[in-house]
Image (tube, rainbow, N blue to C red; front, top):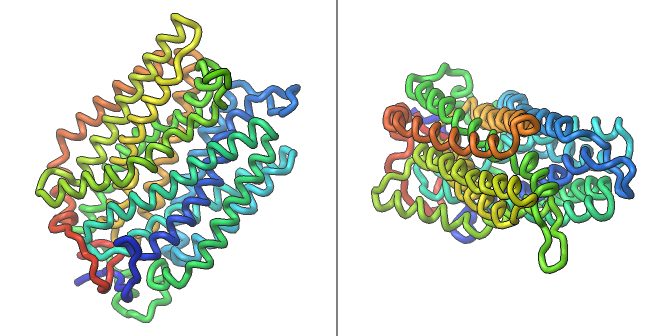
Length: 462
């Protein structure tokens, strides 16, 4: 029996449901607000209190500690956010309420008071917790089970994330560093408001996804929420949880971008370019820029391999992504070595590191989102997506701890250690890949292109 959620016919644009682009722009503006704030948060915390654009005067260690806790809680909040959607609201309403909380949180950060600073962070944590897991689950609901376009759809969605991240690092980063930190925080709030307006305007293309099953008129769908998990569903959940170990390690390394690598760019990198100093926050836009240019190419490469019968399972892509990203830290090892010998390091080391990090990210992050919608039981759809984002949160906290450790161990040791661990861990998981993939019970078998306007499915069949 299938526990899939049936959809009505969908209008398509560029070979994908129009609803994908509604979610694309909603997430783009949400990420504009989040990454814009993230780009200047640590710099604001360590900024001297006597500067014209005064910061809080915290030490690097104190700033990285708060950064780690904040970024962890933002994603851990996805667990209650997913549970609320599954049990009470449905994904569509959860995204709406999350967006409202985010507008409020970013707006409050524009107030130059410490109560506003902590209150704003709290509202952002709650807002991301409601929005992030549920909007991603809705993307999966746009595609029929077995549709090979699902992975590419998530990559397109992921490009939306990074268009927002790229624009915010440039615009919010510049406004925050040059004109005032709180102006930057306020600008991030305006971005989220635009995203919320766009989401409400596009509801006509989202009628069949994200609705609360508890109020569904389909008795079979309601019954699926009450039945215990089958053996196949349990096995698939096991695979998901084991794959989340890759997620923790990946983000623990990758999220040095907003912390240690951000500070390294600010303090130890020669940022002069033709007589002009490149703002430190702009380097974070490199990752987003590379994703925009490389996203569809990487997704197309894997889809072509799949159609040719070559190895291209989600787990294989995720493992390879971790290894590639880890290898990128060897460039940061070179940068740290150059700084120790010359007193500064060249910008191209950061560019090369972000390039490798981006290719690795494209192999693991959008693929993991799609993987969850293929394997997760229908009654735990948003919750499992929430657990995934919580794992990214733990990775963020790990990133903060590693950044703090650099104060005593030095960047050279930290960067090299991250590179070696990621590569070795990835190779170790690769040894057990085939065994893990048998537990998916063929969830990725027989994938093909499905363009017909037919009924779609949100999650895996039983």
